[in-house]
Length: 422
Ligand SMILES: Nc1nc2c(c(=O)[nH]1)N[C@H]1C(S)=C(S)[C@@H](COP(=O)(O)O)O[C@H]1N2
Ligand SMILES: [Mo]
Image (tube, rainbow, N blue to C red):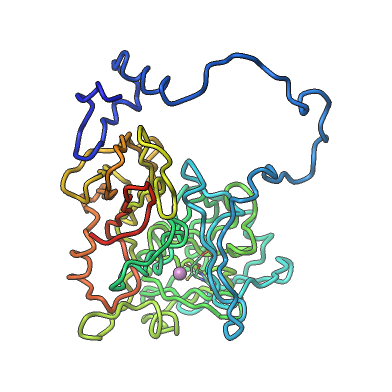
């Protein structure tokens, strides 16, 4: 690769994304791949598994036993907080943009209720012409829509607000974001059936879990793109994601996507639930609190190389990661290998849908010296992911929610990767 210096696009080894497209690069693309991938074929051994039939079809497929290391990280249980906690998606072990259902992150305030849909009700009441109650079989008969969209907890990456850079992996620092195809009934359809009173301005959603999770949402958003989701990647919601039904509020902080949804109440004012007063508010530098900071900002993270990985040898790598925005689609991701001094545009190699995860990559030659890898995303509204310094100057360092700043993986001369501040 050393001879292809015309492919250098930014400092410290970043190479053109054209290399990934294999477009009119002639020998360059060929030599990049042939020098990296595969060994020369010499002999072909027929493995044991090819010599006799395996087990037949099964009722519900499971991942290969050789991939059992790909796991959510549920952390340690807290006896003072029964069922509470979060598990994080192993972002660094997955590819593509859809999170498999068994690996979708979880955030529960009182554990996962064991709901039998036959005994579950969804009630719409308050400022409506007629209160309605639906059971699962009623809802299943409504027309549905499907959308591939991310869900992110507003506490995701929150440790990066602290003064000292937390030690961790892409999973432990950023793993409270996932992306799925959500299928359900547009809330506007159900609200139209109930007949919303003109005085109504807010909608309160309440869950059937022991946390009684409640959140208030402006009616304008509720009528825009919110759905009552029943399916996740084509199958009924997992219990952890709110079976039998959840609110799904695209692009907004995960907390408002109330799981195990049992009540929707129309009102003039927000309900001032615990989870929108004592929690999920943003503490500002003067210690006042900002309420109802719903949208998730434009954000990107590098998933490889990422925290705790070890580069074994100098040479060609792909810097790869995910980008998303609560405001729309991702229009551009740039990558730096020198701590933000110079940038190059990455290739977005997934469909960059509205409020979905986008995947980006860029070739990088590691020459054995220290490197600082950063990504920054731009969304379709023109918003650019801020630096940490910019974010802190705006939000102060008492904040915990909504950390969307650029994050840096430092690579030391031994090839070890760690979270650092620039
Ligand atoms: N009923 C209820 N809904 C809830 C929660 C909860 O504890 N109970 N947690 C919220 C939070 S904080 C987040 S980030 C998302 C997480 O959704 P997930 O577990 O499907 O990833 O659900 C939200 N909805
Ligand atoms: Mo959350």
